[in-house]
Structures are given as C-alpha cells and as structure tokens.
Amino acid sequence: MHAGIIFLLVIIGSVLFHIFTPWYWTDIASNWQGMDDTITLTFWVGGGVFVAVCLFMVYCVFRYSYKEGRKAEYKPEDKKLEKILTWATTLGVAALLAPGLIIWNQYVNVPKNALEIDVMAWQWGWQYRLPGEDGKLGTTKVTNINDENPFGINIDDPFGRDDVLVQSDYINLENNKPVKILLRSVDVLHNWYVPQFRSKMDAVPGIVTFYWFEPNKVGEYEVLCAEYCGVGHYAMRGGVEVQNAGDYNKWLSEQETFDELIAKNELEFENKKLAKNNNLNLNKDIYKEE
Image 1: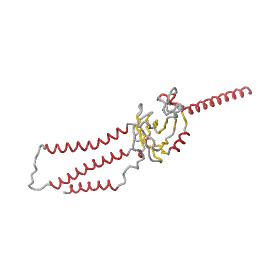
Image 2: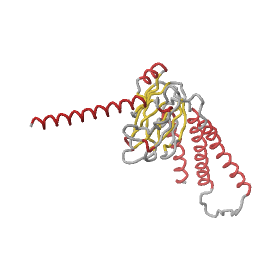
Image 3: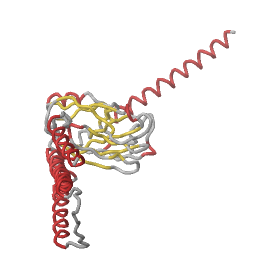
Image 4: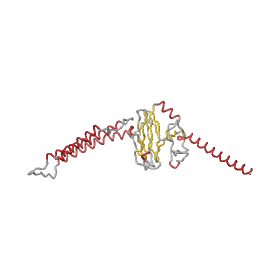
C-alpha cells in the first residue's frame, strides 16, 4: 500500500514539476521551430509512457497486494499481451523517429541562396571567413595556417583573395538571410552552438561539416562550444549580432579582406626590413666615428 502511494505521488510531482517550473528553452530566433516541436513531441510520448507505466504499477500494487489465502495465476505465455506491447512500442518509436527524420532532411538540404560562412574553431576560440564580392569562398589547407595566413587560404586560388576575414569571437549576420555554417577545427572536436537558433553541429578535425539556419529576430546572442574540448572549454564563448540589411552591409564593408591582410603584412615586413637596415647603418656610422 505504501509503495503504491509513493508511486502515485511521484507521478503527480513529476507532472506538476513539468508544468510549473521555468525549465523551458529560450525564445526561438530562427526558422527551426520544428526542432522545438519534435522535442515537445518527445516529452508527450516519453511522458505519456512514464505516467502509464507508473499508473499500471500503482494499480498492480493495490489490486494484487498480499492477502492471506490468495493464489497467483501462472501464465508462461500471453500472445495477446505480447502483440499489444509490440504494436504499442512500434507506434511509439515511429512517433518519435519520423518527425525527427523529416526535420533532419530539411536540416541538411541547404537553400541555394544561403550565405556560406567558414567557422574555424581552435582551443579556445572562434574566427570567421565570409565570401567577398565574387560570392565564393577560397579553398584552404591546414598546412597553410600561420600568423600571416590565419585561415590557411590557398594563395593561388583567385576566389580566396577577396574573402572577408573576421579574426574575432564575434560575428554579425543579416536578419532573414539563410546562412550555411561550414565548420572546421584545427585541433580537437568543437561545436558552434547558439541556443536561440536551435541548430548545431560538431567541428571535426580533418573534415568540413555543415548545417544551416535562418535568423529571424534582430538582437545579440551568445555562442557556446557544445562539445567538451579541453581545460578551456568553459571559456570558449563568442557572440552573434543579427542586424537588418543596412546595418549588416555597413559592418561588412568595414571588415578586412585577405588581399588587404597580405598587403598589410608585406608593408610591415618592408618597414621592419627598413628599420633593420637603418639600425645597421647607424651602428656602422658610430663605429667609424669611434
């Protein structure tokens, strides 16, 4: 009897906790409402099974509790019960999987007008690369990565010369513009995740993974690494600002291209070379005077 009452209280407490506690996810800010719908469906199916099983246990405790003189019936097989349980389980699993497969199919089919953004992950931070006026990202190679070429862009690829480089943990996006995220990692597993966008994917060393979303709410959002990546994982954060078209284009025009980075590096090299020569000449003059 006491066990039955405990099980009943567990059911009531679980349902009340689900209804009255503020555990729900943040307001959505992208096109992936289907993600929320599948999670809600999972709660209904999983929660329904949980409540049904617990109620059945409560019923059994009260209905078949020990009484002196009562005898239990032994049934080694019950084909009718087996069929009911098999079909019920099949329908429950199908109800969970089918909507998820539909959403996944949409998730990996990127719209043709999506803007490709190269998201490069490293311990422990992010940096971004966007296509320039030609609308195409240049090819990259890990062995090309150095201080002068932080993204490893192939110098001989003409499509990479006008690529826009954002060497920062923060990126701006245009509102109501689909975005294809191309994920790269130079060391270990990472995961570029903005909770409000309801979409994420692992960045795997050696390959380029992708997914897409369309931001639909202007505002600032936090970027999190959703894959444990080392001792600095907790601090691997960034930001996204979703802007209207005018503000976004203004921000984009202020960013540095790969061509401009090359020119800046060459100028710095020439200045250092000139300064070194001046120091040598100065030392020679001092030596002659002595």
